[in-house]
Image (cartoon, rainbow, N blue to C red; front, side, top):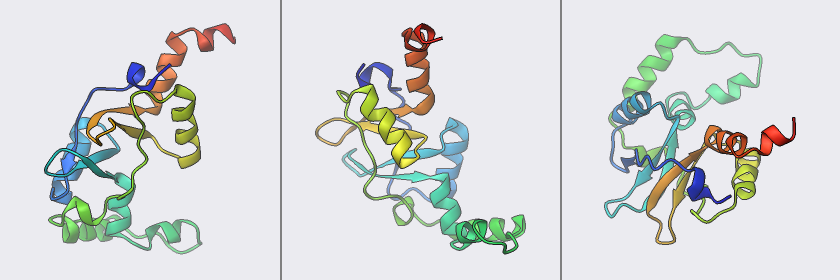
Length: 153
């Protein structure tokens, strides 16, 4: 099965200059945990995730999660988010995002989800234009409807 068969044609995205406050709003409204970032021509130039924003607001937060240090309080996170709220997505996005092509096989996509610990992956054509997004649940749903999981029970 090819990626184009189970990708979402949802092109919810932001541009590189979108302020973080708006990125958060679009994520919340769309229910997406990451968003493709497009340049002025509509070419995929990055991906920004909830994790990227938290890391930007509290750079040492993820280090603290792996230690016995006290976690920051929510007021600290709120103040930090306010400080970066008008900065552009381009400052915090992953610049070399994992991307699949519409013709990539489901096994290739599944391997990327597992190896890169991703929840979703943008689908771009050969010219680099966003054509959709694949979420883990989309792949699982397609496989279960296709009988692959039913046949193994």
